[in-house]
Image 1 (tube, helix red, strand yellow):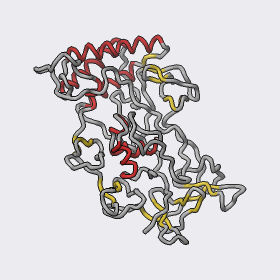
Image 2 (tube, helix red, strand yellow; image 1 turned 90 degrees about the horizontal axis):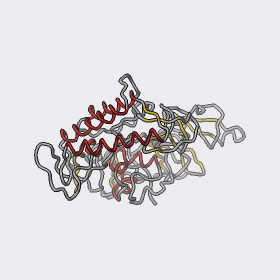
Image 3 (cartoon, one colour; image 1 turned 90 degrees about the vertical axis):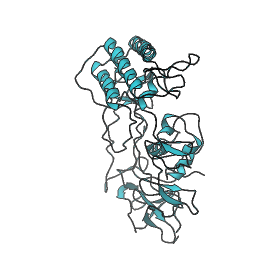
Image 4 (cartoon, helix red, strand yellow; image 1 turned 45 degrees about the horizontal axis):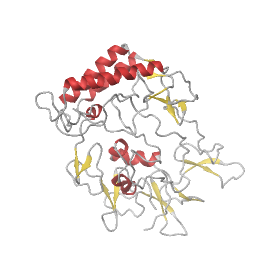
Length: 392
């Protein structure tokens, strides 16, 4: 069975790069001032670092953790105040509570989670539609807004796109699973449903179109029809599989398989979330709270005793200021109009994620480190292996 090279995108996925500050949680009562915030946040993080036995090359020392993070947090507070940001004690308390509730776990992103507007410890004066910028890791938009593409937006706002039978613009499309039909009535395009299983594919300049999660079967090139994505152990000539599966190119021909889980071998370098591939095996990732502290500095020597950790470099020596809430900065235009521009996603990078946000979100749903560490060769290979895109 042959398949057309164009298929409908899975649609934007929310890649949850879950920072401990949990900037998307709604605010509630519990007002504190900046001094209380610095002290409480620092102590809560360092308590968790020790309780979780976080691993650093030279160990962890509680007093050093408190001093280091405390100086960073208080300096950040001074800078934010000077640069015009306002402090919100209710949302700041939520950041502290989030650290305590996280414990020693690593959150698993949920692409179907209900959107919640940002609740930021520090916020600015810019209203919706205003020009915004990054200030010390926070944006200068008003509370409840986020900075996306240099503009303050409501990240939970949904565009009011036309539905079936309504006039549409080919440039901006229609609601999900509906496309802008420019063939039936060329002068007055209207929205029409995408074809389902067994129905003829829509032939466009960019390729064939089918409903979401379907592909176009071109076994008979004179009568291409929409078909379901291949399931477990079925061949995947396009590199795409049903939800929750990935196309394993190690097989000949390639077949759909379940992503490796804890303890499984991971020859392609990715595992089911939240596990990560280390030395060819899926392992439990280090607790996320460990990333707030880098451990005792080099040259001090290993620390022993009750207030120690045991072995990794840590991710950050200062205050993590929250989530990037602007992964997807454009409108969902409904149907995919042809092959996706994968940008640099098929190449190993020295930075997290890649230029195509939908492909990055798709990969990082399974392999979170691709969006928190670096976009490695394994991440680039996962673009095809997970069915997130096609590399030339």
